[in-house]
Length: 190
Ligand code: SF4
Picture 1: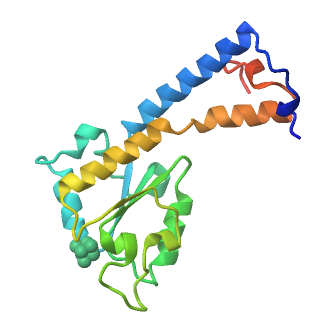
Picture 2: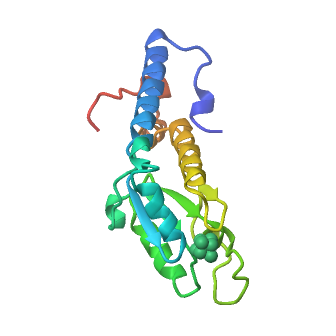
């Protein structure tokens, strides 16, 4: 039984207020994050042309706040795997993913990245989810720009709905310190 299970069932006004504040902060951070995605385009094959099309003025990915490609994993939070990944590239892709800071998300762009596509052979990785976790799969060979934007909007919904890590960490620290969640002072320096 955890310490939280031993906490009384009633809450005080202060606890309620802090819970509401935590929810508001989480929602606000989720909203800010979903409209400020920094993309690391890991482009290896023909799907890269379609990525360029999405990024250019006709489809204008900037409308979704994801217009800045970053070519350092340390400055990106969305790994966009664009194209065929062969077995030799798999460890490199994994290293790039590991170098990205949390929170981070992965999108498989096209069937090659999602499942190996029609390259059903020993040289090609049969889906990037064999080496890294994937949040959104975009089908198509190559996918149309509208499909890519649809996938991006799905990812935005996911980012908005997930709890903010900072708040989760505060809760964990509080439970380790023997505090109840409502007693956490989010504004206090830690
Ligand atoms: S999904 Fe089709 S277009 Fe994209 S990299 Fe594979 S073969 Fe090329």
